[in-house]
Image (cartoon, rainbow, N blue to C red; front, side, top):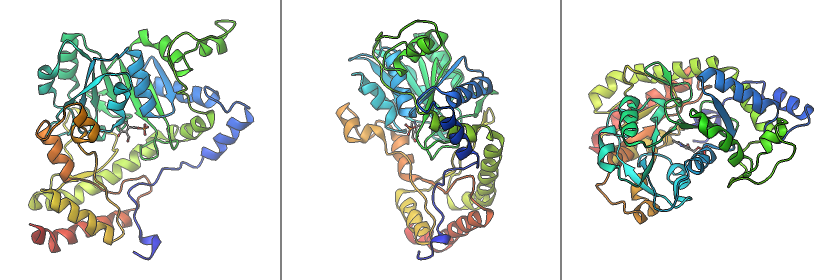
Length: 388
Ligand SMILES: Cc1ncc(COP(=O)(O)O)c(C=O)c1O
C-alpha cells in the first residue's frame, strides 16, 4: 500500500491531550523519580475506583507479576498453574524463582482458563493459580475461588486486559489475593510501558512496598515512619518515574471517554459481522451475561489456520493490519523444557491457529472501521471458498 494515510494500523496509543501538561507539572514538582505526586494520584484513583486496599504502580505488568511471585515466596520445586494461552511474562515471573509452570487449557467459549481441569492439575506442590481474563472477559471466578479455597492455594489475577471489567458486578482484579495490570501502549490506558499490582490481601501490603523499593523500607522512611531506611528483604526497582505516572493519570481521569469510545468500536464490529460470521463458520467473541467487558480487543476465530493466514494476508494487502495472538506456551522451546507436548492443551493449540485480532484503538474512525468490514466481506466473497 503506497498511500500511508490509508493504512489502518492494528494499534494506536490513545492520547487524551493533557499528558504533556501533567508531565510539565511533574517536572515543576521537582520529583520525577518514583512515588511522586502523580504516582499517588494514580494509586488513589485506582484504589477508590476499584475498591482495592492498596495499589502500587510498577514499571510493567511483567514486574507486577515478578513482585507477586516474590510475595508468595515461590521457590524451586513449586508448581504454578498457568493458562497455556497467554503471555510469556506469567510463566517467566515464576520460573525466575525456580518454579515449574503447569499449563492448563482454556475454555472454547471465553478462551479463559478451563476451571473444570483445575482439580486434576493441583498437587501438594501447587503454590499459586494464575488466571487471565482474556480480552477483559471474566474467568469463572466462582468456581476458581472455590477450588483454590478448598486447597488453600492463592489466586493471582492477570488483569492486563481487564481494567474496569466486571464479573457478577464486581471489578476484575479484586477476587485474587493479588492482581496485575498493564499500561503498555496496546492497553486501554497507557503510559507506554507500565503496570500495577493490586493488593487485595492486606497481609501483603508492607512487604510489597519493600520488594518494589529494592528490598528496603524507603516508603516508610518517606512517610516519616522510620528515621532511616535499610535493606530488609529481596527486592528490585519496580517503581516507575512520576513522568510516566503523569502520562497515565491524564488517561485515567478520562476513563469514561475511553471506555465509551471502545464500546462503540467493539459494537460496530459485532453488529457488522454478526450475520456474515454465522454464514461463514467464523466465530465472534462470546461475553457471558455475568461478565461486563472493558472492550479491550476484538477477535475473530476463523475455521482453520489456512483461512486465518489468508485473511491476514488479504487485509495486509489492503492496508489493514491484523494480528494473531499467543502461541501456545506449552509448545514453546521453554514450555517443552517443562514437559509440554502436542495435545496437552488441545483448545489452546486450535484457537492459537485460528484467532485474528482486528485494528482496535480509541481513534479508529467509522470510515476506517467500514474499510475493515468491507475488506473482510470481500475476503469472504472472493477467497474463502478458494482456501477451503
Ligand atoms: C495477559 C498479559 N499479561 C501480561 C502482559 C505483559 O504486560 P507488560 O508489557 O505490561 O509487562 C501482557 C502483554 O500484553 C499480557 O497480554
